[in-house]
Length: 273
Ligand SMILES: Cc1cc2nc3c(=O)[nH]c(=O)nc-3n(C[C@H](O)[C@H](O)[C@H](O)COP(=O)(O)O)c2cc1C
Image (cartoon, rainbow, N blue to C red; front, side):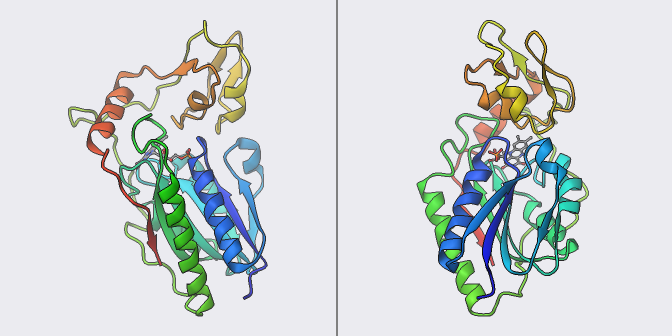
């Protein structure tokens, strides 16, 4: 076996992508009898460097699905950072039980464009960052077991020499548009400009929100102030130890009710190999 290690790289504002990526990487490493390491590109400082993949490591690249694709604010970064002469990459798309859309196909295109080889692709449901009920608690034990099974199947494929076949995945390699979020009435939900609100009586100005924002858009004035781009990732809302942050944008709330109503049926993790 030519691999010396497994490396997981991930973007994960609310932690579910990280959880799935580390579990998959740990089991791949165990199965291949090599160590594994992990690197996040979630925070602005973490995106100051790229990844120089080599042929003797197996890469797990994991991203959450935003609007059916790779989160658009990370797209330019991953296009320059995902590089490696012939490195093998397992693509992992973590999604909120609605749809992973074109994410895996788009990831495979980025991997190939970066001189790497997509050898397998996984779509794994996880708690929807927008909701406390949609896919709540996921990835759960059954998801973790599925990832372990997939790790075994990927390792078998590598051992059997069938490793140079790129995974066939659904979706478009170069999608032209993003999923348009819908409201309960079926019309488009327009919440691009929404930013979190602060319950000042609950906020202790601890600064956690400032530290977890992937856009570096939170600054501490008297209370947290949201100035730059907000990607609605919910990192600050979910990390706030006092529950002092919330969105009250009517269109976003209508979209959340729509997905909770229409996408509550459990979807299972899928491996494309
Ligand atoms: C802005 C945004 C857009 C999303 N779009 C989708 C989507 O199109 N389909 C889907 O099933 N889940 C979608 N989700 C849910 C995320 O993919 C899911 O919550 C994921 O687990 C978040 O990863 P994280 O915990 O690593 O941040 C979206 C979440 C956010 C914040």
